[in-house]
Image (cartoon, rainbow, N blue to C red; front, side, top):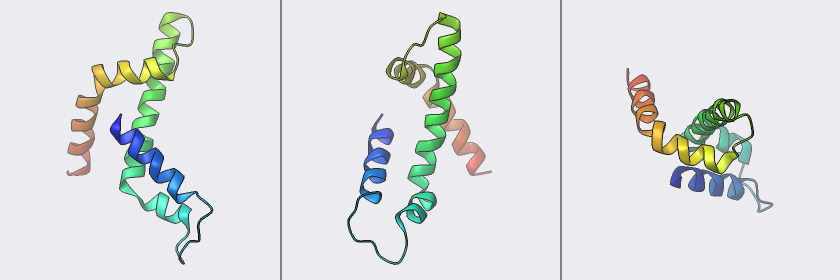
Length: 87
Protein backbone atom coordinates (compact mmCIF):
# COMPACT_ATOMS: atom_id res chain seq x y z
CA UNK A 1 0.00 0.00 0.00
CA UNK A 2 2.91 2.33 0.70
CA UNK A 3 4.18 1.81 -2.86
CA UNK A 4 0.79 2.86 -4.23
CA UNK A 5 0.72 5.92 -1.97
CA UNK A 6 4.25 7.01 -2.90
CA UNK A 7 3.70 6.45 -6.61
CA UNK A 8 0.41 8.36 -6.48
CA UNK A 9 2.19 11.31 -4.86
CA UNK A 10 4.95 11.15 -7.49
CA UNK A 11 2.33 11.29 -10.22
CA UNK A 12 0.57 14.26 -8.63
CA UNK A 13 3.84 16.15 -8.18
CA UNK A 14 4.94 15.47 -11.74
CA UNK A 15 1.58 16.43 -13.20
CA UNK A 16 1.28 19.70 -11.25
CA UNK A 17 1.30 23.08 -12.98
CA UNK A 18 4.61 24.05 -11.40
CA UNK A 19 7.38 25.12 -13.81
CA UNK A 20 9.30 22.21 -15.27
CA UNK A 21 12.89 21.84 -16.42
CA UNK A 22 13.76 20.78 -19.96
CA UNK A 23 12.62 17.21 -19.27
CA UNK A 24 8.85 16.89 -19.34
CA UNK A 25 6.91 15.41 -16.45
CA UNK A 26 5.59 12.60 -18.62
CA UNK A 27 9.14 11.64 -19.62
CA UNK A 28 10.22 11.57 -15.99
CA UNK A 29 7.19 9.51 -15.13
CA UNK A 30 7.77 6.97 -17.89
CA UNK A 31 11.40 6.58 -16.84
CA UNK A 32 10.65 6.18 -13.15
CA UNK A 33 11.22 2.62 -11.96
CA UNK A 34 8.97 3.33 -8.98
CA UNK A 35 6.14 4.32 -11.29
CA UNK A 36 6.67 1.28 -13.54
CA UNK A 37 6.46 -0.96 -10.46
CA UNK A 38 3.34 0.87 -9.34
CA UNK A 39 1.74 0.33 -12.75
CA UNK A 40 2.66 -3.38 -12.83
CA UNK A 41 1.27 -3.91 -9.33
CA UNK A 42 -1.90 -1.99 -10.17
CA UNK A 43 -2.46 -4.20 -13.22
CA UNK A 44 -2.17 -7.32 -11.07
CA UNK A 45 -4.65 -5.89 -8.57
CA UNK A 46 -7.11 -5.07 -11.36
CA UNK A 47 -6.80 -8.63 -12.72
CA UNK A 48 -7.42 -9.96 -9.23
CA UNK A 49 -10.44 -7.66 -8.86
CA UNK A 50 -11.91 -8.96 -12.09
CA UNK A 51 -11.37 -12.62 -11.19
CA UNK A 52 -12.76 -12.25 -7.67
CA UNK A 53 -15.70 -10.15 -8.90
CA UNK A 54 -16.57 -12.88 -11.42
CA UNK A 55 -16.44 -15.49 -8.67
CA UNK A 56 -18.65 -13.37 -6.42
CA UNK A 57 -21.09 -12.50 -9.20
CA UNK A 58 -20.70 -8.79 -8.40
CA UNK A 59 -18.10 -6.04 -8.34
CA UNK A 60 -16.08 -6.48 -5.14
CA UNK A 61 -14.52 -3.02 -5.43
CA UNK A 62 -10.92 -1.91 -5.67
CA UNK A 63 -10.26 -1.60 -1.93
CA UNK A 64 -11.35 -5.16 -1.20
CA UNK A 65 -9.41 -6.48 -4.19
CA UNK A 66 -6.34 -4.52 -3.12
CA UNK A 67 -6.44 -5.83 0.44
CA UNK A 68 -7.10 -9.40 -0.68
CA UNK A 69 -4.30 -9.30 -3.28
CA UNK A 70 -1.81 -7.88 -0.79
CA UNK A 71 -2.60 -10.58 1.76
CA UNK A 72 -2.70 -13.50 -0.68
CA UNK A 73 -0.40 -12.66 -3.57
CA UNK A 74 1.85 -9.62 -3.19
CA UNK A 75 4.85 -11.29 -1.55
CA UNK A 76 5.06 -14.11 -4.09
CA UNK A 77 4.44 -11.69 -6.99
CA UNK A 78 7.24 -9.39 -5.85
CA UNK A 79 9.70 -12.26 -5.41
CA UNK A 80 8.82 -13.58 -8.86
CA UNK A 81 9.15 -10.12 -10.41
CA UNK A 82 12.50 -9.48 -8.73
CA UNK A 83 13.82 -12.84 -9.90
CA UNK A 84 12.73 -12.07 -13.46
CA UNK A 85 14.32 -8.60 -13.37
CA UNK A 86 17.65 -9.94 -12.07
CA UNK A 87 17.97 -12.91 -14.40
